[in-house]
Length: 172
Figure 1 (cartoon, rainbow, N blue to C red):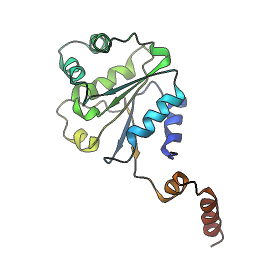
Figure 2: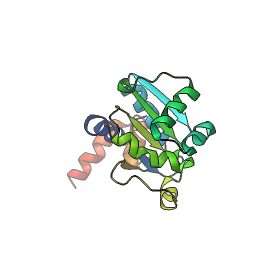
Figure 3: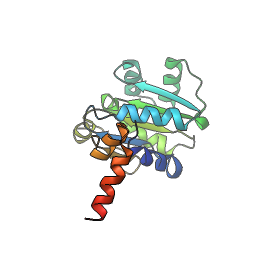
Figure 4: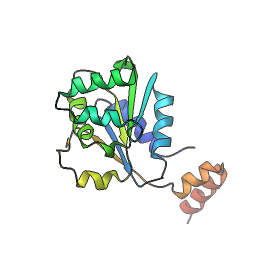
């Protein structure tokens, strides 16, 4: 299913990939779907981590150790040897860990070539209520909205109708 936000994801990859990307939007609008498609299509290696399913990762990021050690422990827990140069990591339901949200600053400032993308339900509300510091300026945030009418028509294969509507609009 084609979504217009895919182009914004591509722009992030091409221009600012060192800065972690946070996709914010309402529940059940396809954030996970489109990010999953993007990661599968655009990167050699892709790691998907749903924090609702991996509470151990939340515990790791709650520990009082530096972020690099947290990342190393996460790799051990996942039993993965992560090639950072060719791998994107997608943290889904990131609202479950304030500490991981705060750690995004480290991923941005690191000399390592981290490629981090994250999303979560009710993330905007969570960010306003955070007790720890949010990495202002260290995370690229984009808003995702429910499917608009044009995307709905694209999903239903009505591209000719899209063209006709645009033509009518332009000709008043």
